[in-house]
Image 1: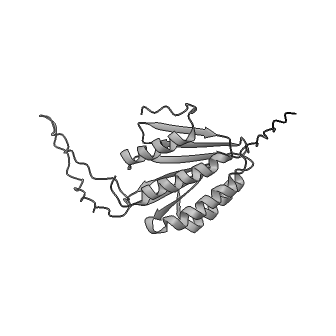
Image 2: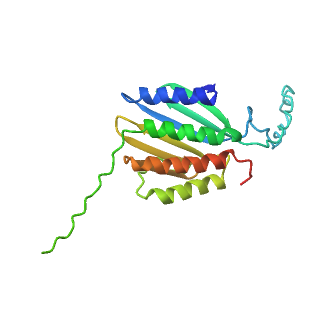
Image 3: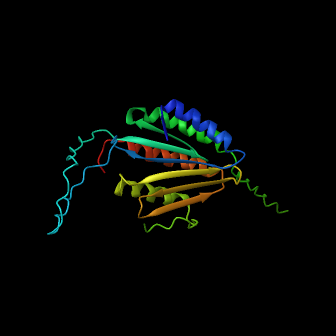
Length: 126
Length: 85
């Protein structure tokens, strides 16, 4: 998974949509991201060893608690075949990104059926 | 996991939007949204799940793209906002 800047992500996503015109599908996943790069520390203490068993070796250091996250981000991942890209969008860039992303979707998702307008015949009564 | 992932949807788009955003509000950390587009088949699939409930909407109509844009705009604002839900 390659982490890209937003502009790069959009251009790579456009390429993905172009490639998928002949074969395959593009999947774009979106979720909230709090900026953590490691899982939250374990809260439950480890179980005590039973009698007769050797105590566990003290190798692991206690991980410090992560600082609280003030700002939330938006994480986007895109996949086509085995190619995966991702990007993180901060809240200050959301508006700009949204416009570009929606334009991209509108121009690339063009293989769907268009609704035919049903012509209503006027009642001509003589 | 209790979600049923391959159930085709029969409901309309509007209730899906509302329940999708509501799902994010309930579990913002787990909730994720996936958009899958297949140009060859001409199908669009939208999925929102929090590992317990899974909402799926499949479509082949071009008019749903506009609705999807609105949904994405709304959801992305929720995701990036600093407010605790």
